[in-house]
Length: 62
Image (cartoon, rainbow, N blue to C red; front, side):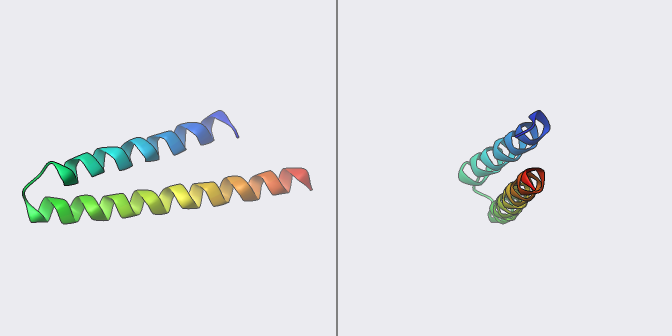
């Protein structure tokens, strides 16, 4: 795992936590829906990044 990978994954995790706090601490339904969409996008980005890291590790082994 490279330093850049750790940084990107950490930023995704921080943003996910931030959007979770926004969704839990608001009374506006619109803000909650947007925050939930953002959390879903962050989960998608984290999964994609993990897949890319896994593939690059396999390529290095070959």
